[in-house]
Length: 75
Image: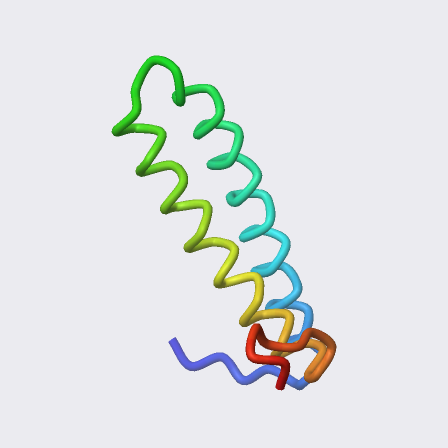
């Protein structure tokens, strides 16, 4: 599959991917809270998945709005 897309379509696709990652992060964060008391291992895995989606969101933010967020080192 070799679709040729213009820059506007590429940005729209990246924005949809970011929105999807946000939704997944919220879902896993809620799941982590729900599992914390009854299933510590499941809660830990949900927390890790939340962090992974948050990393994706940070990367997508940097692609879509370069320089908007500073890194933890202040740069």
